[in-house]
Every structure is written in structure tokens, then in C-alpha cells.
Image 1 (cartoon, rainbow, N blue to C red):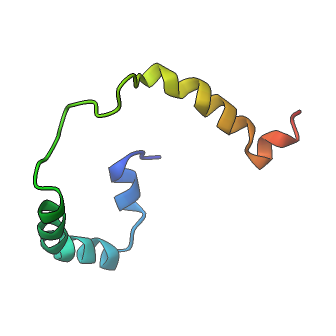
Image 2 (cartoon, rainbow, N blue to C red):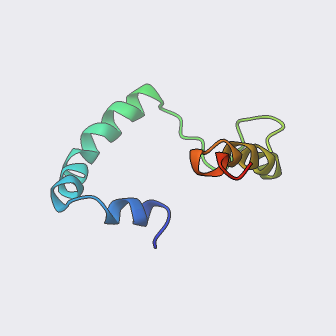
Length: 71
């Protein structure tokens, strides 16, 4: 099972993939006009740490219906 973008793209129809490629320039033009400055590699959220996400993920997973019966 693929994960990430390649997995998402793989489950899309050929028509959807083609449409995404065809519309890409229009989306890039509109988005770059709205956000002219690209910020890559910087952490916008102060105090964010990947380790902060794990406890939250654990709590959220406990709330899934399939995990409710295990209590």
C-alpha cells in the first residue's frame, strides 16, 4: 500500500489525473497572486514540534468507532 501523494494519485482515475495536470497552471497563477511569497522550509507555527503530534494522534485514534468497542 502506497502512502503519501503517490498513493493518493494512484487511486485517482486517469481522467482526474489528466484534469489535475491540465488545471495546474491556472491554480498556480491564482495561488501565486494570492500568496506571492513562497515560504518553504520554515516552521510558521511557533512552539510546534513533531513530538507534540503523537499524543494528540493517540487520543484521536481512541475516538474511532472501531476502537470504542475495545474499552
